[in-house]
Length: 482
Ligand code: DUC
Ligand code: ZN
Ligand code: ZN
Ligand code: ZN
Image (cartoon, rainbow, N blue to C red):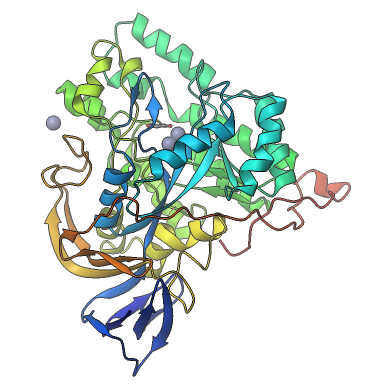
């Protein structure tokens, strides 16, 4: 079966050009003019872009005494309806649990995914067994390990554990990821605000100021540098963390930063809404920031010091959020966003002139495909690439609302936001899964995408070591150009 996408304008991270795309089976077979296919899709007036990749989701994840409400079917369905054809979810072993056992559980849950998926493995505790299992995890197609520097008493790892795990990543050609917030300071600030009677959602924002994020980002960058490994900082929400990343990159360190679409358009005023439910629904970590921090994130995307826009999709119902009535520290942390990431970023970014269409494709797909080593199978439209394709209508418009969304939760943090620019047709590995509002989300159609470890290449020299002796060559770098 072949499908010809005809009359559209292809937009990749580096090129914008008019050409037709021939899809055969699961892959792109040819790009050009004068092609023929058994089925023809008219893409006149539309952009033809690579499917989005959201590298940061938490589907059906046990967390803070409950489980995130979207599972792999509703979560990937939301993604597909919004142009995202692949998610990378966090496999989260309970502290003390074997990584491989947790991985088995995640594969089980992901069996019903309607879109392609991959995993990052979280390092939530440390032992010789964890150290050993990390090699097996890499053999099973996972080349990235996540570390929580916050959530003291549950998921948080200390500096000794971070350093050991980073060294292991370097050895294995894997990429460490960090949730950068100083968990010790957050825990103290939470106690302080609760004791002072600030028990509502605004206490969440007060107890997680930009300084806790900036400190942790700086620390993780230095530890990664000492371990000779690149670093990916998830959900960068503020200038303090962005500045650390920018500075590290200027010194030749391979450090990547991922803002979330929520932080780009929503701000801290949400936590001061007198409606408790409104505010609690928006509690996530890090919290939304002020305009100055928001501007810093946009500037980072424009200048290249930040590379990827994700969602951290971790959806909880209003009922679940109520666990934190009277104690903001018990409000399950997380918001949705999978269905809205691309339309919101297009509207707030491309339509305002803050980013070009090519930068949009880079931030939603190409850059993360390179960083996670699945490029060019994913992340572009090229002959031989998986046919993950979004036919994007730049004039289509809608007002975001919880009514009709694919996520199972009862609200949407972007409620009332008017987007212009929406997917018209979405294809995942050659199958049309979304067509003019009709979603054909088939449980189990998604495929686990294995990611190879990175080849051994010389690491950038640390700034002070560069003045003395060259550093030995170690494994663990990433293709250049991101
Ligand atoms: N932050 C959230 O808001 N939810 C899930 C985990 C996280 O770090
Ligand atoms: Zn996090
Ligand atoms: Zn409200
Ligand atoms: Zn997360």
